[in-house]
Image 1 (tube, rainbow, N blue to C red):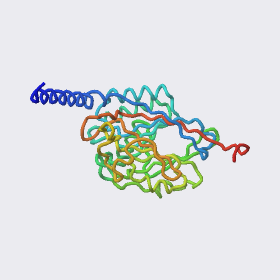
Image 2 (tube, rainbow, N blue to C red):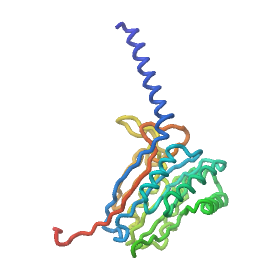
Image 3 (cartoon, rainbow, N blue to C red):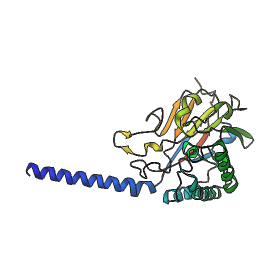
Length: 290
């Protein structure tokens, strides 16, 4: 094969690969759903919450209810978690709320358990004033039965024990108030913390009660390359917390890759994600301790 023919063959191959990647990113991956399952073992977890299953979604960016969202409803209906949480970015624009309200209503009905959300940076973009986002949260709760936590906490009770559910407002745009979020939470408590972005991870690691923190925002990078991973993540940490499980001090952090998309309607090597987390208590047997 002469040099010109080799160049033509290489060009055809590169074009075919680019076309396949484009089809994968725009037409296939955004509509698939990966379900990630793992357990968190903690000696601080009250025994009454042993075995609690939590379903996490993030970054809905809901324009319409596509296959990935419908699959999420089916998984949650079959898995029967004890709590469903959404870590921010429900909508992009105020004229797109109808699909979001419909999905959250279906989600609440499918779960049959409390569904709790925290605000994200795109929620604040869509509703940029205190009055507008407060009105949106009020409407959301009234229409769907979903609970919004924004710099607040609630006590969860199960089998005679209690733990705290803490929800911060969006830390990416600076709306998070950790003092308000943890008001009344004992340092010795087990607190499950919901926050939209990794921006407050180092500060949350300094909170003794923050045992497990769930976040999103990154979309896992949304576009990932082989051997490289996320190309870009909108975070002060860069790609350090792009997706997955991390530990800072005594606090565990999980970053969900999200289910929706922003800016570009594509995902590549980074499918939408639903996380199922099982909490497990661990008591040290002193007779076997060394």
